[in-house]
Amino acid sequence: MTPGLDLPYAITNVSSEEDKIIKKCLVGYTRPFVKCGKQGYVMPGVFKKHAEAIYNLRVRPDDVWVITFPRSGTTWSQELVWLLENNLDFNTAREKPLFERFPMLEITSKIPEIAVELIKADFMNLGSFQGLNEAVKTPSWKTIEEAPSPRFIKTHLPLSLLPPDLLNTAKVVYVARDPRDVCVSYYYLHKMVAKNLARATMINFWEAFRRDLLPWCPIIEHTNEAWKQRSHPNLHFVFYEDLIKDLPYEIRRMSEFLGRQTTDAQVKQLASFLNFNTFKKNKSVNNTTGDNNPVQFVRKGEAGGWKSHFDDKMTLQAEEFLIERLKSTDLEYPSFPMRETTTL
Image (tube, rainbow, N blue to C red; front, side, top):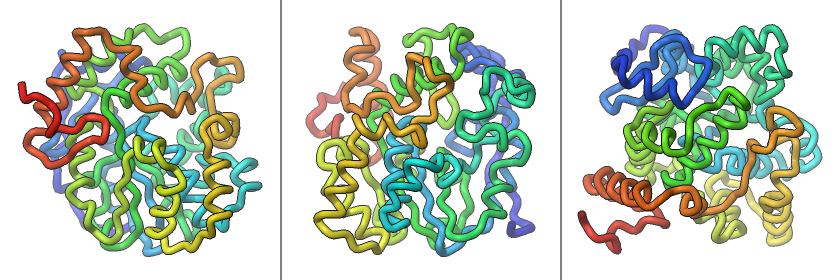
């Protein structure tokens, strides 16, 4: 880790009112949540302890990073990247958990304080989810820092909270998704993890989301940071909706970005392996908490599912949210073309 770099951004506690809104949606957190940087990225309070170490992590030229806002096709993209970088080793991809092959940088700092104690006590086998057993013993950034090359690193942190030399040193894949679908998937992730303790409704979750009061929010600013860097030779920007629309085409684009040659037959193999109906049955990636959990870590793999969860009021709020946040950027989601949307 490079010594001597102070954080170039401030970390401050959210207001007591904001903290209540967040904790109505997320269970198990006892410390106040915090906001980071001028964009006010929300993180659990314990992130303060790890922020400087993460910012100072030594990036290696043979690293490959996948950055997303949560529930944006992260797991799908990780598996695609890992397979391309590992000679289409489907056997290992089936047998070795993705969280071991492609660990999450800040996972230690997202674990609720109460959950830490439950994991240590092996309560309901919580520690088996996404490698949390190890993450409560050793900070996840430390494990990654000491990992042998080549490293594959997942993070939900925006570029501004990551090592400043990241893009100039390593390959980075950024995946973006329609915020409305993200919110729905984020809600179901919480239900899966919290199980019977979950009390928030979809309406509660949406209200917190649109007010930028869930971890890693605000989503538009998060995505726009990467969008503005989309011409950088070390950044590959892709929309989740495009992966769904034409996976073979996006496999070829990803392969070219990573400098890997793939034949038509290999592209077909990859597309078949990553077909969502097959993909969600792979236990090495669909690391759900509990075999009988009705909510799965890898859910539906669809675009536009938000329409069956948002009522008329939420739909209007979402349109207003997107127009207001996007109007000062040139970022445009495939599912929400600004030029075709009436300005409110």
